[in-house]
Length: 290
Image 1: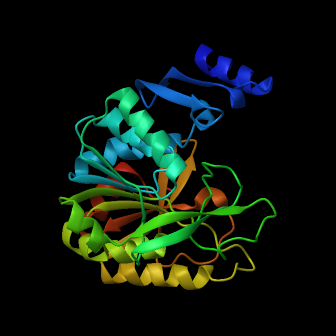
Image 2: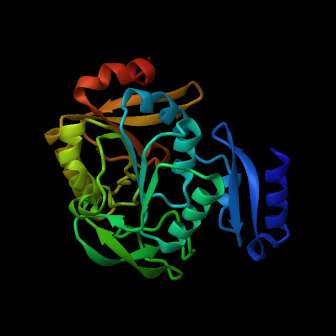
Image 3: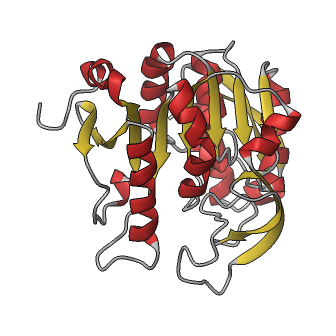
């Protein structure tokens, strides 16, 4: 553990981190970046957050050139990974949580990231205003969702008003070029996002990594139905679904026809690969058991 991480952990342990605001340099994704610590917000960067994503970005972005679209920015974790690997990439991020948008703008400014467009709205199938459920009650809750029935209600959850935007409205305000790499992490709203992007998935043929949380067994209400609708979009768009396994040997892929019923949180990440590019991707990431 670096001295910086040790110091930040120590501040948290003694209860001071939530009272302080400061910036710290950290080595993340092979690059030294400045990270805001704003009364505890930013501590997620002290943890080794989704290291598999660094590898996926570094290996697959060159195969799928174009705009890097990040739906569900949260605190900019994927932004830093993308800009560390490819500083000149065109990045477009969507985030409805005002606190996360403000924090991410601070990350962008501190690190002088260029060619970044941050859209302060949730990408979905309606324009206007909605409510974001902060399920854990925290300001920058990474489990925040636009779906009120996505999880069992907690006593400490709360809702905040947010902006919603369709892809058609986005493109009225800002021209977005050919999509290359798409990341979707939206806590249950991935069906709406994929529905908005469906014409571009058919036209641009990007690689898409999407978190689809487990159905669990017995299935949670609404999840199997949403998953079947996602499968239908993939079929119409001629995309092949591959579940990502993070193993000691690195990333392995499992080709699946349906999302099915599963309960393992670690198997929530999926690659949607254009059918004509499956051989290229599986040459980099072998199938499970090979």
